[in-house]
Amino acid sequence: MRGLIASCFVLALAACSREPSTVQPTAPPETKLPASAREVTVDETETLLKTKPGLLILDMRVETEWAEEGHIPGAQLTNYYRANLRERLDALDHTKPSLVYCAIGERARLTAVIMGELGFKEIHVLKGGLNAWKAAGKAVVK
Image (cartoon, rainbow, N blue to C red; front, side):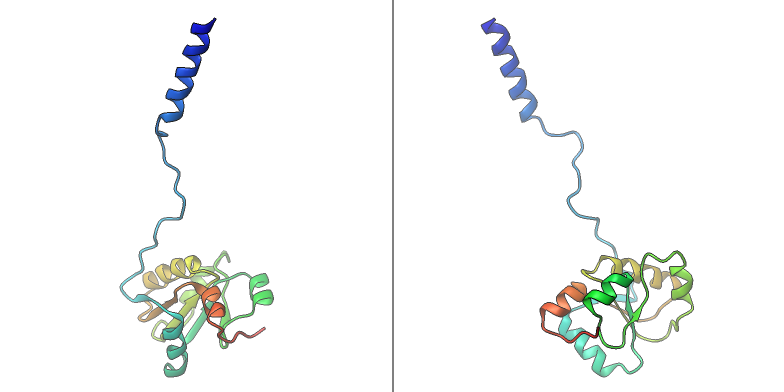
């Protein structure tokens, strides 16, 4: 009986010490921005808002986020999850400089990839999204 218990103990220890055969990712893969896009800080974004008249500002969050959290002044609610997103983006002026943001940044980065494919010339992605904007004490509109 002792031998059986000892064998089970050794097998259990061996099983615990093995590395898993597949490692689960802890974060989404990094989205590679197109050449026409770059991430900008909150301060750089504030400068863009002041120095780029006609800046196209796209908020990629959903309607409830827009209503509850507010948005950057001048932004258009675009909602990344809409079925016709590519068509909506393609209908915009590709030559205007644009600022894209969401809550923390990933939807904005994915949108920038689509915009790059569509031929947008100057795309700025707010690093850290609206959360970073608000954490820096910047104004939002509700």
